[in-house]
Image 1 (tube, rainbow, N blue to C red):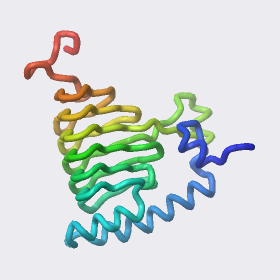
Image 2: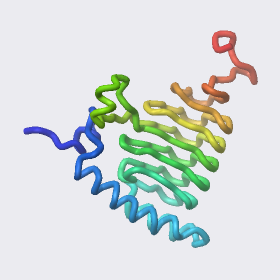
Image 3: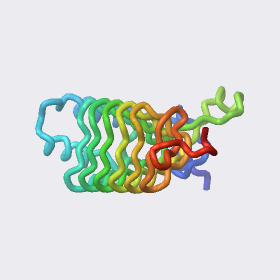
Image 4: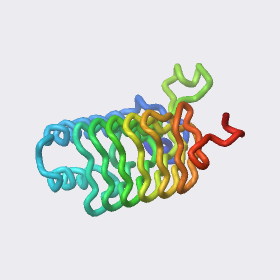
Length: 192
């Protein structure tokens, strides 16, 4: 049996984003986002209730301050007491997991959406996704960008404005573009 384009997307395979089922999901999420983003000024409990409607998992006390933007929502899993500030963008064609107690600054962008390197595949509308995982009690500074396939470990810190292109180990601090792990307050010789 042939798999649907949505099934291919969820499996991390190349898929056609113009597929009607995928487009219908985007429309549903767009309507939900309109309702969600209209709640700026409402209590956090209202935000939490709305997140439960669309996201894949929402832990106790998890909050995303509107405005918020995502592709689907159902691929996003928030642990308990996750806090995401204004203007976060999550392109969730693949899974995005954010661990308990993690705080994310304003205007952070998390991308799972990727595109083939072959121009003919791109012109054919093919895409793919690679999951992003952020551990427990991490801090992601405002304006940071996290690219597809990245894992950020527990208790890691990502500096404001950093572009995270590769995994960041637990307990470390990464800064810059591309983000590099600091050791003892300095970049290691191998990363200069």
